[in-house]
Length: 398
Image 1 (cartoon, rainbow, N blue to C red):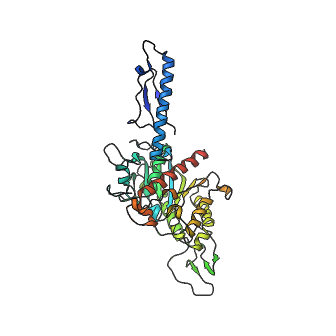
Image 2 (image 1 turned 30 degrees about the horizontal axis):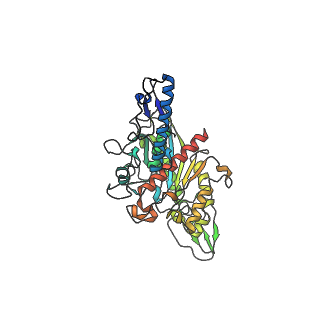
Image 3 (image 1 turned 90 degrees about the vertical axis):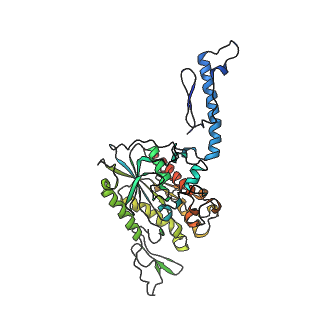
């Protein structure tokens, strides 16, 4: 959004919507007078507005370079208004594995890479902090974890009070762009692969380097034909079945899970996905694109939302150093939103490139690469990007 200087009838600059007030210049009518020559009011008014717009533009470019390359992500602080319970609830279902569960550290403020450090020491994400230095709350966005069966209005502490996931950035964007009440419904658990645990219904067996790999509801995950199968208390797609069932249970009992629900109805407005670490093996990576296509199709069918937008982020372990099966997975994730490869998803599926959001261990709370070093900035940037991707698809769908 471009900054706009707003002038009143008398030519005074009354607001600068996105400029930094500390650096904005004060334009005074007297400065435009020379001797006894006073400009015509209309001419003077135009000059002031032109100069103000120029000043705001210069300040805003500097801010964009300093804070973020995408100015859309500089959100206003949320207001204190309750959701409009006369409008149907917009439900967004979040799925994945541990990084969707959320591993970005909330604090302490003294540790680099925590959300407290990023907001209070580095001044990032100002919409998350109020004037008193407390976390803000989006009363128009409700967060609910279908696995733990806990929920609250969305804030940095909503996930579990210790860590954040993409739900935070995503939910704040949705609350900003939508007038309807929003339910961010997360249904996932860690250490799950798309090629085994989350394998969608209808997926068939395949052979890779002499082994047969499970189709939906097969067990175990792989075997060699003619040899005894290993017995496991699990089946291909078990986590898909569990996560979708948990989410459906919430929607079936929405009034119990979402306090502001007043029977006004709801719409499954979109799906959000961030997953892939456990699929970084040659066999599962080779089928990732095929499995992801079916995953999208099955979710839309299971939730009776055939046109619901689907957004996902690539894996980004090591940033642009990602290689091997991990790179195969990332390329598959990008492929599903390529209209040349998947024209059926044109305009309704969008992949966010996340490798730019990798943060090194030196600026992070922990040396834990598979959880993005537990750096809250990675989780915020992925969430923001997913939110704006969803906003774009929702806008285009109208």
